[in-house]
Image 1 (cartoon, rainbow, N blue to C red):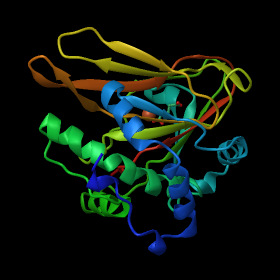
Image 2 (image 1 turned 90 degrees about the horizontal axis):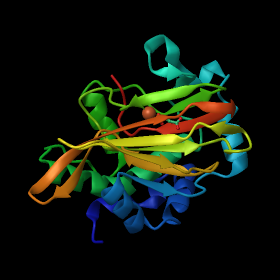
Image 3 (image 1 turned 135 degrees about the horizontal axis):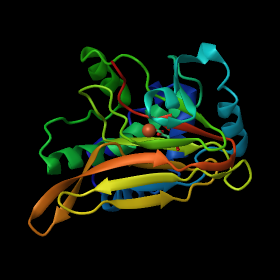
Image 4 (image 1 turned 90 degrees about the vertical axis):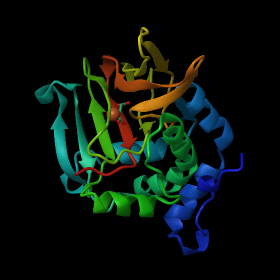
Length: 253
Ligand SMILES: O=C(O)CCC(=O)C(=O)O
Ligand SMILES: [Fe+2]
């Protein structure tokens, strides 16, 4: 794939943690990942984080100084369980992964917008995109840490906060299914115009990242391209405790 937007900025000018995150990202077959995203609306990046890194990130949850806000899902009809949005500066490796993964997805995001007739085009590096968010009044960080206990769940939703939307986001499962928790599957639905919805249950293991469509994605039909409407959520936990790290590339107003 000859894709200008996938080219990385000159590494020499980047902080060491971003270079390390880029090395991690470089281990994946991005043409295959973006091909799956294009075909199905989601793609797994196996073992993006090691088990000890997952535990260290999940352990940040009670540290209020790391976060700008806490949402108790039951109070808003979002489900049951809670999450917190990180403050800037984002902890390592959350911020570095956000910076390193964005350029790998920007090319596909641009192709999606082109096919869907959406005018917005994404710059090749995340700093430029965040600058654009800032100009639009979207200045607050959106990476979040979610925490679920028995019977908790996350209703199907879309992480839209303002006019600016990067169409792909990433969720990293921080707990081990079958060991730390049971139930609590990541679910994606795809609503097609004048058709019944399609669901996918994504079999994630601890440390796996899922890249998935935030809102719309284009699908080629017999009479041209149509938009499908995507939602994601988490099925009810049957037992245990589950943490997830969400990386959303647009900031919030
Ligand atoms: O807990 C999950 O797996 C879902 C997380 C989520 O909704 C998100 O990352 O935006
Ligand atoms: Fe979400």
